[in-house]
Length: 181
Image (cartoon, rainbow, N blue to C red; front, side):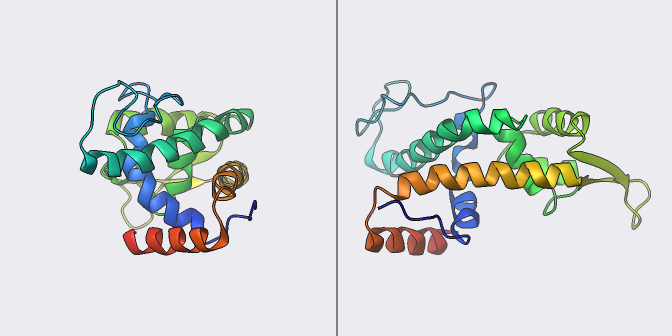
C-alpha cells in the first residue's frame, strides 16, 4: 500500500524530526548516516549505542534516509535540503537571528543559507516597519514555488516510507508524531 501522505503529516514530521536530525545531516556539523548502518545499536560511525540512544537514533536515521532520497530532486530545483528547511521556516521566523536561535542550526550556517537564498532571489530582506533598525526576511513568489516543490518531494519520499506500513500502523504513527510534537 502506497498511501498519499496526509497534508497534516508534514508539519508533524518536521516538528518531531527536524530538530533531532539536522546536525546529522550537516556536512560541517556531523555525518550523514550510511544507508548500510541499519543494524540495531550501530550508528554511522559504528559505535555501540544504548537502548535509549537507539530510540532517538532510529527516527533520525529514518528521517535522514528520506532526505537522502529526496536530495537529488531538491538539488534539481536549485536548493540544498537545509536551504529548503530554512526557506520553509522564514514565515515563522522572519528574522535571521531568531531563526538561528532555534536548536536546529548554528548562526553561521543560517547566514550562509540565507545569503544563498537571497542570491537565488528566493528570499529578500526588507526593513521592518515596526523597528526600522531591523531587517526581516520575506519569501519571494519564486521562493514559495521552490518551497512547495521541495515539500512535495519530501512528502513523496515520506509516502514511499509510509507505504511500507499498513493503514492501522500509519494511523498509529501519525497519532504518536502528533502527540510528540
